[in-house]
Length: 408
Image (cartoon, rainbow, N blue to C red; front, side, top):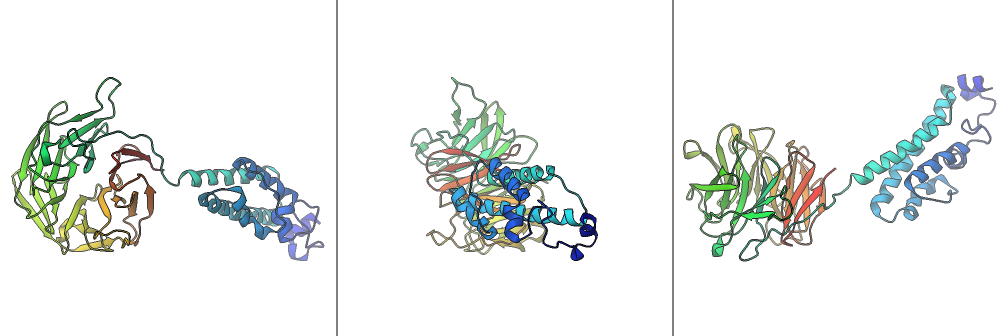
């Protein structure tokens, strides 16, 4: 009868026979829940998840079991995924035994192991975890950093502050400092004459150099003269008619980009000492970010609602090739997004927020909302930047802490 059922299952003498346990008639509830084969499968799955249950009477109740097994929404959602995948595996195993005549109990353990691994991977891949925090407030007035940038070597974090009151303008957090030595050092030079230093960025050039842009309309280039000794040089102070909100460097040439609230994007050639090109957009600029992989692309953070992040190609001048964002009703400002940063692969933009969140946008999709949002601090997040060599985000906030977040 086994061979006859295998070759002509539609003419089987026992069409209701369960091919998994061969002890009872086949029904939906029996196949997915009460069959000995299915019971063993669910046993291994629940054992791997560290849970216990009473087998429900009906298979349609399987999805609701997660309400009692897991105490959070994420666990209940992923339980539904595991249930659907397990039901599909049971159905495929039924068909394999009927049409291919292959059977064995080892498949049960493999299916259960796969389900557990899938659950663990999905559960652990959601969100981020805080690794450490450090007090980086300025020396005199205890101000929080306005912007941060990693040293290209990945072992130091540079922070920019406000220039008012003769306070510290730049600090260096050395991750390699040992006990007994100051982990945070402050640079002596103060080239910005007033206001907030809105942006600090390392240039993608051979020698380590960084640029700052401030509310005093100035763009300043900093060169390393010795170990942790940096000297500033003002590139220009009058090309912008209002505050410089963002700075960046192009990789093809020694071009320093600056974006201002005067709606201008200036490209300054640091080698020859003159402006190389200018862009004018229809809204004030918050920041400008060249793509780390496509050297012709750069992103401008504008103040336009629902079009905060706008992608441009330097070869097309003022032609906008992509825009996305969304209206944040909770914010009283034009854009509650604050300070963006590219991921190393050039596919994602991270942004701080007036809410205590880090927002992550995927530029491959013209989505109205971020692809992921991470609750990172107790107060507004000013910026979150990627570490180049590890899947880490570092963030600064008005809660005076610097946060490290593992992204998986």
